[in-house]
Image (cartoon, rainbow, N blue to C red; front, top):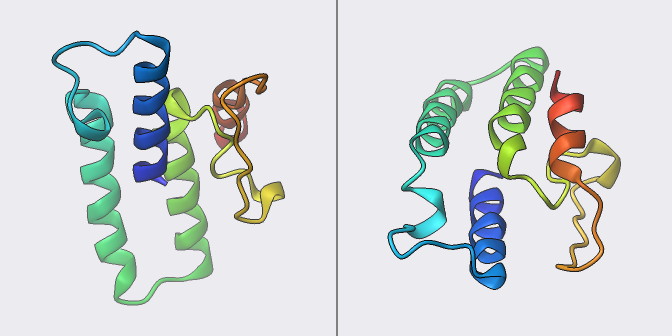
Length: 103
């Protein structure tokens, strides 16, 4: 989800002309996003050895919170069952909804 949030956000910035000359691949120039990706990766390594359902749920919520400021596509929305139809125009503000849902 970090990849998709970074890719969608970066593409939207480019398409609207608000990307800067120093913007880097998949928001790697954003310290908070970069830190979230690194933290998520470390947590995922810990889960890979065997995780409880509760631990997976905690991780999923953390990912949703981490990407919320960049999430304009409704990523991590359980009601979507992993299917994310996305169009650049006329979309609701999923970033605000995801931040609220993540708690």
